[in-house]
Amino acid sequence: MTLDEANAIMTDSDLLFTRQEVDAATASVAAKINRDYATKYPLILSVMGGAVVFTGQLLPLLTIACDFDIVQASRYGNAKVGAELTWRVAPRDNVAGRHVLLLDDILDEGVTLAAIVALLKSQGALSVACAVFCVKDYGVERNAAKPLQAEYVGLTVPNRFVFGYGMDVSGAWRNLGEIRAIRGK
Image 1: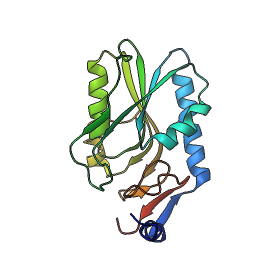
Image 2 (image 1 turned 180 degrees about the vertical axis):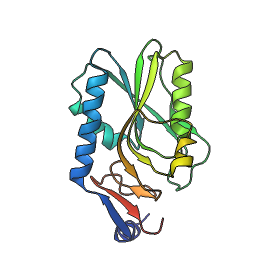
Image 3 (image 1 turned 90 degrees about the vertical axis):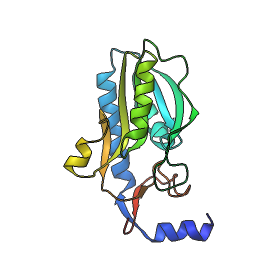
């Protein structure tokens, strides 16, 4: 992608959530995690690379004791449509006997997170919960058909191609502190 192409994407997008709304949503997720994990010692796994911004903003707001690690699995790469799941960094051997909290940028169709959760459970996790910065709203029937629902959700976004706060569009704009959507998509 060229600079001109990246700038054209920004020009042809709509602001959905401001930086202030994004920060408030992250703080709300952190408060719920702090409450629910106050008596546990969770292993927090961040799903790279999309969750990098959410993770970086959320972790300093957590007042609980925790371990931290990453996983990296993707169905998208730089594409706009999901394909076969590809592991870049699989969960390590530190999952067995642990309460695991997965952090991710978006719960879209749920296929990627469901695969990660299944693997963690097969590795002996005591529990697995998901905290996602946002969840895509496909409507009641399609939302109910997702293979999993996140326990912690910052924002609900419309069924459009969204980017910012860790979510990219063809590799660009992951660094935004706000959430935007491409017009017409």
